[in-house]
Length: 269
Image (cartoon, rainbow, N blue to C red; front, side, top):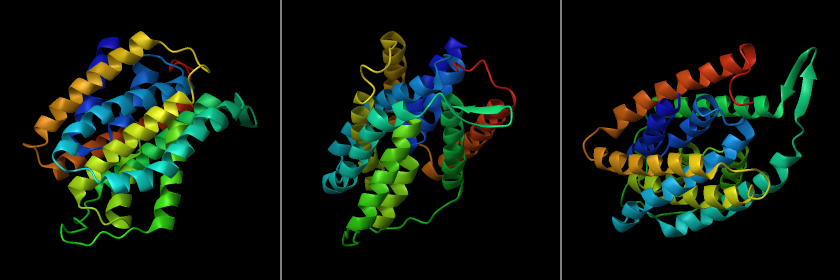
């Protein structure tokens, strides 16, 4: 299982390099099901892995002018504040047994995995649906500040709860709300994901025991993957790739829902 886990770690990076998102959606299931990490701890690990990988991936995008720093700051600040607050205060405050329906107890771990699986299903739908390229190169950039701040905070809260970078939420938001061309939206999204994930992760330091060997190994493989992904992105059609990946994420999301509800246990709980 661990070998499959290491291969999957590479795939996390490849997908981040290819389509600027999606990789983080795989990180938690990889850690929970292949490395048997507790789901709550897996969301913390995921923030570090996704943050570090996105930071490395953002460098070449910055060099080629595909990052809009002003947008990253406006969107990033509420997002970073929300993710840090979520990890430092909200996640520790969730009780181990959240609520029960008859004999069925919804635990903190189950709640995390269900939230995550639902996020995967929504993410997959947004990947499968083909959207026309909005925002032309010549469009004058306009900022819808109230909407960007609200969306930034919502993405931050979700990131904090489930440990996913939220690229699939950020990219459409940047295209629609700040009129960025698609390529710039992908580059800018990587920088925002890196900042909020790594700062969010610091909210967990000292609260949980970290297996740094596992964490750094998976991160290292994901970083190798992002370079492969960046190289492949010049050769592969992003649209068809995104669609294929969307279907894969949808199947994974449904698998997690079925497994957690009907076949619990054996996933690091």
